[in-house]
Image (cartoon, rainbow, N blue to C red):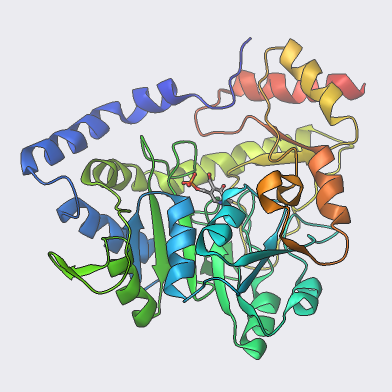
Length: 365
Ligand SMILES: Cc1ncc(COP(=O)(O)O)c(C=O)c1O
């Protein structure tokens, strides 16, 4: 049996007709940038996130970058985040000219340790970016409380957490602004690059509208240095179509995750204890084991593709050599050597789920 990590052909056989009619709708509209589809998708996505505003941009990376710009981040500022994430979280900080400041993740989750956030704040701190990694939210109550006490912005990196709840509230509504990615493999994925910023802050919203569109409010009148970062009509129409399936697909992911939880025994399932009213949307199903590389090879030999999110912490890569590191990033470095993501998507078949469980168990037998 061959089990790829994701299977777009199955997704296509499920929603292909709807996607094609969404594309046809855009072709017939003669409008490809900043049109009707994006305006509607922004409204619908804002509703999903219980937010007043949503601004479509070209990618999740741009969503982070432009949100930081809207917050006024620039050279001389510091932005605190974690090193156990996708590099884009911290690249976006570098793009603004600010310095990334890395703190460790918690012992028992993959999220920012709030006590270390407190220690990392200086008079230069502009913002904190907690990352809702793998599909569960960072400890936002503690993070927001600390940020508020010090007057710094909170930008959620919600690129992996579409639809996740934290104490009853959706990702995207938990900080001053949030960045989402619609990279094709995400729980809500485009067929290309796309991203979104959500916020309840009217001032940030107004700035973001300019920032994503060359800095112009009216055509050919520029109020600030802006960028070309729009979520195009084709992707917006596709995303609107897929948004209708999101809650069903998340539920399917959660059902498969439950099967993994009960079928795979004696393995450290870090990060799975959720606070009341919080959910895991299982963008990734991650196990943490000491013999990760051997297990990965064993599963590959049995036709099961697994991935590592992420094998080398961000602070160890060359572009981040001038970043600040608070204390030692022990948990970050340990976890990057242990984590392994098993295939989990809404189109997995029962026999594939069974084979994955049997194979992981077989390795430890
Ligand atoms: C945690 C995280 N941050 C940022 C990004 C960047 O998003 P994009 O690939 O859309 O630029 C991603 C996704 O790839 C991500 O997973």
